[in-house]
Image (cartoon, rainbow, N blue to C red; front, side, top):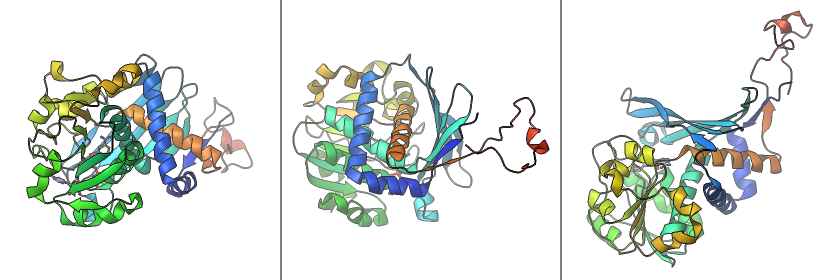
Length: 359
Ligand SMILES: NC(=O)c1ccc[n+]([C@@H]2O[C@H](COP(=O)([O-])OP(=O)(O)OC[C@H]3O[C@@H](n4cnc5c(N)ncnc54)[C@H](O)[C@@H]3O)[C@@H](O)[C@H]2O)c1
């Protein structure tokens, strides 16, 4: 008996966002990540190395799959595209994604959902969690470099774990810099936009720094090698390609660097610049050692965020649960499941031949 596929379309996600509320959704995502990380055991959840297709024609981009398998439970696969010319050339986000949930008893597709909004929220939430655990325990001055889609949820998430007293921001594209204040108006914060000449003081005067740029491969770093405050915490979000980095090596060497996924960060993140022995524990390990984690708050720390598939697993399951609570979404029958499992043509001999079985 087929169960059909739960579908969360764009309009369901918008309704979910409105009904749950922007702040509540971010808070729930941060807490779901915290709980999942605390309980996480690598032997219980298999997160396969992400892989995909990278190309330079017609423009630089990639499409990749990010799979997880809860042993004895479902498989989640997010398909994500990164096309940094999208905002300027096509009026589309750089990151567009879809998530799917698969039944490992039968192989059926249980759910499919937009993951474009979810990716932005979970990427913000991961930095919010890292900031909560690693940043100074006081009101913070925040610097943001790269003012695209992720910058909005990065600042939102940080605002949920710390009071923000000042925001200074930089983007080398004027249209991104000019529109940032409007996009984060919901936070009620003033934003000082600084030019390239102000980057050194932006770093020097931040308690929390976020880098979330679409800098080209080989064109980083995007901030100067300024030591910053002795407790500076950095969420480095943009490096997710071999050869793409945002932070100067000196900044990494002065700090403890916490990868989201060690092998992935060595392949694509800021950890590309470090010898294995110079890399700190994964964020998940710090969260698991709960009693210990506050000790990093007065030190220089970097969260090397490349986007861990487990975060997408958490995001999809949270969205499905919230959709159920708010009676959102629909069910469709995608897979052509015959009434006789041994006869793929069995529908042909029934009077209602064209109609598939409804979930
Ligand atoms: N870690 C994660 O989980 C995760 C998740 C989603 C996206 N990302 C990455 O984060 C980055 C930003 O994503 P987005 O969706 O905000 O992209 P976006 O295209 O919306 O914004 C990127 C911004 O960076 C700016 N930029 C590029 N080079 C710069 C430089 N040298 N200095 C200052 N600004 C610069 C661009 O002008 C643009 O405004 C991308 O690299 C993306 O791959 C990471």
